[in-house]
Amino acid sequence: AGVETLVRRTLDDGIILTPDSFVPGAERDGSIQSLGRHVTLAALQLAADWADTHPDRYVTVNVSAAETDEPGYAAEVFAMLDQTGAQPRQLCLELTESLPFET
Image (cartoon, rainbow, N blue to C red; front, side, top):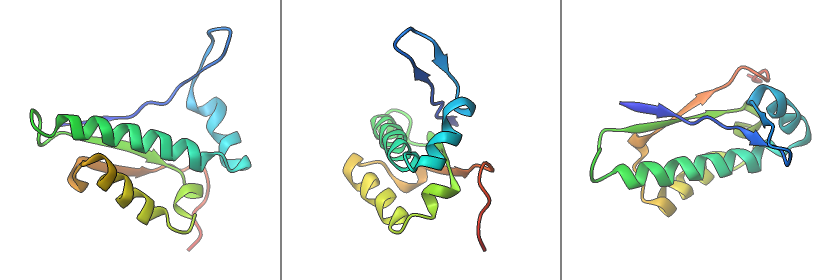
């Protein structure tokens, strides 16, 4: 069984924004990389916590083309796996369709 990460942004006035309202801007201004790292690391920490009680559980993280286009992206993911102790089988990366991929 798996779970999917859901990212929300809470403003100072308590309004909660869904990804469609802030991710496109993050992709345009380049902050999607730091947001993606934060989400992936948090998801892997959770997956690592499940290792003993739910060894077959995995977490899915949505990833933008803008993230995967960054040099060293895969190495960063492997470093986060090492840092958290999560196993690669506990992570599913799902590519979003928000930006076109270059072939």
